[in-house]
Image (cartoon, rainbow, N blue to C red; front, side):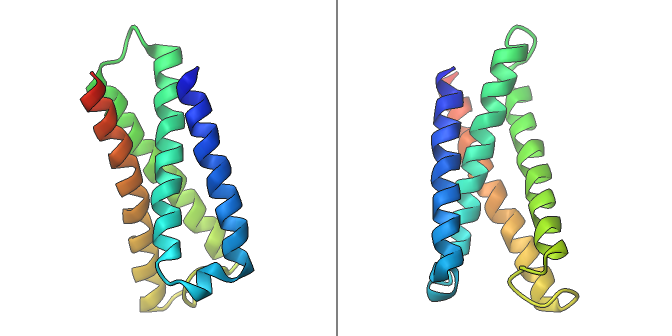
Length: 125
């Protein structure tokens, strides 16, 4: 239960920071997007960890939890990038080289956040 609370707190912080970013921080600070994707990856990773531990704790090893974190964060990151593409809010015009670089960078940043959570899960066990 405690992991769900941590995940909720992180994701609420992400939401508030994203709303502030829309207000101009994304344009004012180029690294803000990196921070947001890493923090989002951490929040999603915490949620996946809490979900797996609370529903499958007797069946799942730490290796499987880490694998689920990585896959889950990647899937949520892809869905977010599709959302950005659909609403044309990506960091660069769609179809350009800059767009593809930004998308890959965003997914890597998401994975860094997920990897941090996966590393913490490994260290705790």
